[in-house]
Structures are given as structure tokens and as C-alpha cells.
Image 1 (spheres, rainbow, N blue to C red):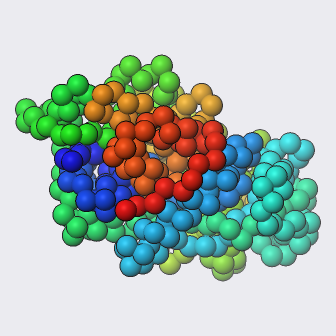
Image 2: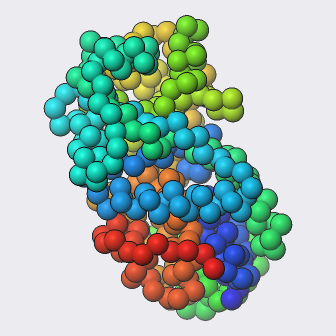
Length: 374
């Protein structure tokens, strides 16, 4: 089949990868360069972890997520995953730190509990007077997004896919299978997969009944000199607990120290609107990480970035078929970690037509057998 994939974030790239492995003729479009630096997949790194608060279905599906990444690493000939483990902080009863521990217990996943003194001795950037407990899981860490995107694009070119960056799509017609470009060109495909992230409502404004576009901010910081070594050896921080429940991605040889929080978001009327963050936004976000971080004022701000995501009301992933068009949104800010597995599942649905099965898996509504590439 001739298949168009519109949107070259992690969902589009991994869908194209899985389709090419199955012998399909794939054309991958993006409105910007591949990898688009404004996309949710274009940042330096993203968090991967097992615990999932109350969404136990996604916690179980992380087994398939890790398996999908392992298949991708084998094809790329290199892993872009830093298995550093993750920690979670519990500041008060019923915050997301405690939800981490509850999720791990329900799934019977291994983790260790630390007192504040034990945690601060191991991670000296923490203020032991500001939290109740800390938890460590050896499963999880950091996915290197930019390296993954660039490597996948290279793999696709080498294996016969057609990549069309800087190509804006005007419309995708599910009845005829046609893709109309803004330059007037019209192309016909057997199937069309739309993985356009926060830009999806431009092509399908009717999905605004389910998808909401939000703008978020992340800040890259420079830690105090005496804490650099601790941060370089640190696991990822899944949640600092408390009111914010922000997360932290540690620095490595190729990445910087990043503070971010899904709760720091606001509605956006367009994915390209208001994409320049202010210094004040960065400072406010940084300061919200104390507690539990000590000496927050000593962290210098290097860069402030914005990102646009689609969200659903229940924070689950989304798909909808329109004839020959399949729209997929690994949305609500937590889709990246499932990237390779999503690509395998979407490719299977494109070929066998079982869109209901895909939707159930994306929503983690039931345990389904692992999908493998042909």
C-alpha cells in the first residue's frame, strides 16, 4: 500500500518505521524540518517511567513500551535510552509522590523507600526538612528525543521511505485518500495516518470536541557548582510531589538539567501562538521546585522553552478513523515514552483495519497481546 504519514514527531516517525518494516510504501510529511524543534518530540530529552498514578493500564503497557524501544534500538544499531532509574518525592498525604508508591505496589513493581535523611545523603540537592519520604525505582530514566528523531529519519531514508520536510498540508480526504498540499499539489494514497500533534485541529477542526491544545513551559537550569556531580549521577525525578508535582530530567554529556511541570499549562488557540517564553515565566517555574530542592535561588536559568500539546479530558490517548484517514494523538503530555510501541500498534491497525482495537489499546482499557513488527 501507498501510505502517507502526516507529522514527523515520535508517533509519525515510529509509525513510518513500523510500516516500512512491513514492506509498505511510506511518505512522511512535516511542515518543518525533521525533527521539528517546536514539536513535543523536538526537545533534548523526555522521561520514561513505570508508575502511572491511578492509570494502571498504562503502567502495565509500559512493558510493551520498553519492548518497542528495544526493537527500535536493534534496528538503529544504538540505544538512545539512559536507564538511570527514577525517584519520586512525597511532600504530603495524597500527592503524586504517594501516588507513585501506590501505583508501584498495585503492579508489584520493585522500588525502594527512603527517609528524608537517606534521600538527601544520596541526592544532596534535596532539602530533607521539606518532604516525608522518597521512592526509587530502577526501571526508567531518560529518552534522548533529538537523537532518536534524527536516527529514525536516517533509518527511514536508508530503507526507502520518502521524507518531505517543510511541506504544509492543506487537507486530507478520508473518502478519496487524497492529500492536498498548500502549494497546490495533490497526492493520492491508499491510507493516510495523521500524527500532527498540537497542529491536528488545523486539518480536523471537528476534533475540538475531544482535543484541547495547551501551551506549557520548561526551563533549563545551571545548578550550583558543588551540586553538578550529584545531578550528573542522579536518576530522573518523576515527581517532586507537593502542589506542583513537577518533574526533572538530569544532565548528561549531551543534555542539560531540565525542570518542567504538566500542571504549568494554559489553553492555546493555535499551536504556533505565544511560543516565546519570558524570563519571568522561567523564574516562576524554577522557584516552584522548592520544596523539595534546596538553594533554588542558586540555580541559574540557561533557557526557557515552550511546547504545545493536545489534551483529552481524561488524559488518555486518542484515535479516530475517517474513511482512509486515521488520526492518532498520543496526547495529554505523556505519549512520548510509548513512541515505538505506538508506531507498531498504529501500523498494525493501518494494515488490518482494526481501529477499535487500536483505540482500546491507546486508552489502556484492557490488556491486549503485544504487537510485533513483521
